[in-house]
Figure (tube, rainbow, N blue to C red):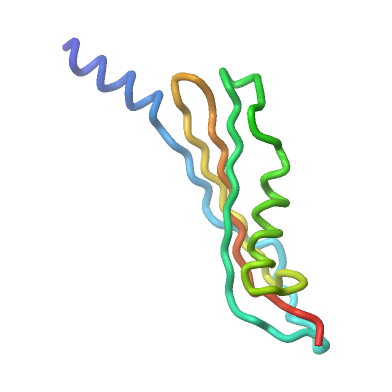
Length: 106
């Protein structure tokens, strides 16, 4: 019984939540832009003891910028965002992945 309780407690602490990917926009690529290909990038933030932010909260913008720069583009068409949360005994880790079609003005 003790091992079962320990396993349950460890699974709660090490559990992770993942959101279903969601698309922010479905508008077509404007005619004056060219598509450079798909890119994906992610960024994570850590919150110590669930109250003290250790890394900055701008990780959505970081992931978006990283995805655009991966193909040397100007913007993302049809961006998709996925979030993941990880609980640890010392805090919370939030990771965000941004993907989409990188576009560049002609």
